[in-house]
Length: 158
Image 1 (cartoon, rainbow, N blue to C red):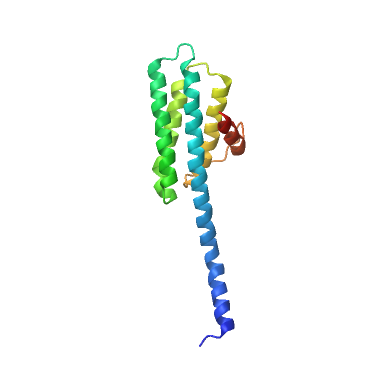
Image 2 (cartoon, one colour):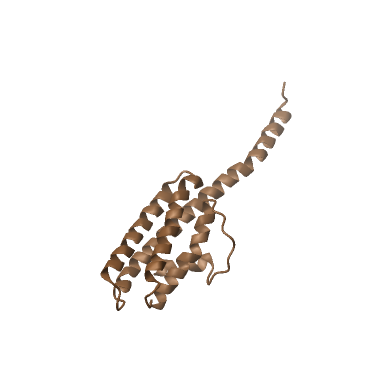
């Protein structure tokens, strides 16, 4: 039979053993929510940039339509990341985010961009590895033009 003291000790030991699992789960959940917010922020900033991009001399209308499609897809990706129950479930959405961002950068590569649009694209590329790490994609650390916090600040005012 257990004494009260041994029972309390056993429960304390069990809670101590389980605390890293709970902590890790909470951290993963928080990282996933931040990844969804970051993706939404990227999508909103790029959506707000579309009128400026359309005003660039020589920018074809079909390129703007293509960019708008990528931005719409980013909004769906953000919703999918937010709804994902696990990092592995969000992984395909984050891979789609990377593909969409690469397509946007590629579509704009030959055009002279206003400085604020270039800054928005830089901020998005700074946050991409942060989002990838949140779902378990191993990304080598890189020194970027700004920190993730600075990137979020740039995107929140764009």
